[in-house]
Structures are given as structure tokens and as C-alpha cells.
Length: 314
Image (tube, rainbow, N blue to C red; front, top):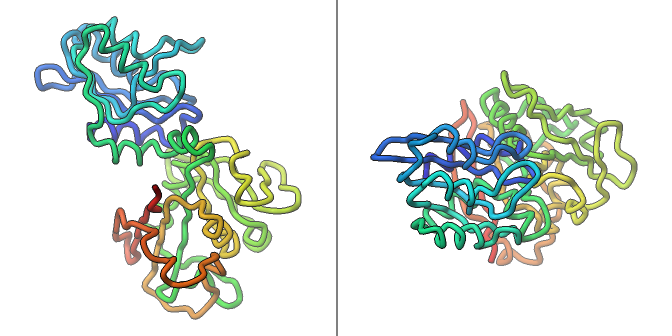
């Protein structure tokens, strides 16, 4: 299942409105098929893995991060039917599909065909990998990550607004990788006017994965950008994953609306005494600040440190 989750990561930011699923087929202890959802949502991960496995799929075990779909489409057959036709003996899945067209029906169809079905293996990791798709289906909005590049004293720029560059090249490269995994990237009007950011992906081989650009503004957006008037309007944006990159007022607005699901804090070992990273985020007292965030990952990127936090929700 770990390998399937890793394969699914390849599709992040490229498959919406379909989920970025990963799939591995194993027979007699050997991997005979691998697949992940392709750009645009097709072929599905299971279809890719089954094609690779061919006749070796018969009697094998299929590991998949999401319940195989049960609905037919003009773009392809239901994966549950394809698995049955292939002769797969066992299916191990991480997460049940909340899409009403499947939502347990895929598992039921497989079981009815005599296939052994196990559900829930490494589900937490799989849900994080497919958070965009799952958030859109469960909460009717994209999954939102907020990126902050800070000095040790929590500043995002010098007093005069200079911010290039607080972090080093390794941290900036990682930030571009996060862009490549997002459907939409957003900044506020102040950041756009001050910096004229391109918000594209500038990693060799990934230039074509630049996300759609959005602007938080009460006015019109420039050509090639989408405008939203407030954080609460993000449900109108197409795509399942949103990366918010700045500035301080925009970051604070999303935090105040409690719409940030994931924090990416890149911290450089410098002190600059400049502009703070956040303004008022709506906390009435310090007690309300506790118990909201869980540390998931800490990494060293050159001289900088990256901490990734997840919002604790019911």
C-alpha cells in the first residue's frame, strides 16, 4: 500500500476532478503491475496497472488507495468491472470513495464476484495523499495549503517590503514542487501589485505543471488570472487543491476564516526585524490557539527548515 500511495502522489495536481489514485498488483510476492491516475483523470490507476499485469493479474492481489469506481463513463469502463474480468483474487483498499456513484458499491460488486476485499489499510496516509478530491466531495471546497517563508523572528520581508530571498535555493525549489502539486495558486492584490509574481513552476521537467493563478481582490483580475472576492468564495474555483502563497493580509484572512488545512512554514536562520507574517486571525485568547495544529513533517532544506502542520478537525 505504501508503494501505491507513492504512485498516487505522481498525479497530485493533475487529475481533478478525478482522484490521484495509486495501484499495485502483486502475484507470488512479485509486483506485476503498477499504475496511477493519468493527467486529466484517465486512464485510472487500476486500468493502467491491469494493462501492465496482463494475464498475470489472474489470482493476484491488487492494492489501491481508493475504492475502485462502480460507474461506467464515456471515457472508460468501471474499474470494479475491469478487476472482476481480470481474475484478481483479492483487493486491498485504503479508503472508501465518497462519490455517490461509487460509495461502497465498488466493494459490494467485487465481493459479490467472490473477490476478497480488505478496506482501511494505511487509510490516514492515503487520505492525506488524496486530500483535494476527498475535501471537495466531503466539504464542497478545495483542500487549502498555506505557504509561509519566514525569518527566525517571524517576518516575511524587510521593513521596506524587500523579500527576495528570505529562504535559500533548496527551500524555493521545494516550494515550486508544492506548486506543481496544486490545481490553483493564490495571492492577494497587495502581493500582486508589489511583486508581480509569475507563480509558475520553474523546476526542470515540471514547467508544464504550473497551476491556475487566482487573485484575492474586490476588483477584476488581470488576464490569465481568476478573481475571488473573499476566502469564503473559494468553492467557486475549479480544482481540488489550492496553495495560498501570500501576503500577510491574505494569509491572515484564510486563517481567520478557518479555511487552512495544511501549513508549510519555511524558516531561514536569519533575523530581519521587518514585516510580520500575520495580522489579526480572529483569536479571542491564547487558549483558542492551542490544539489546532499537528506537526506532520520536519525537513532540512539547505540552511533552512521546513515544518508541515495539519489542521486538527473533527
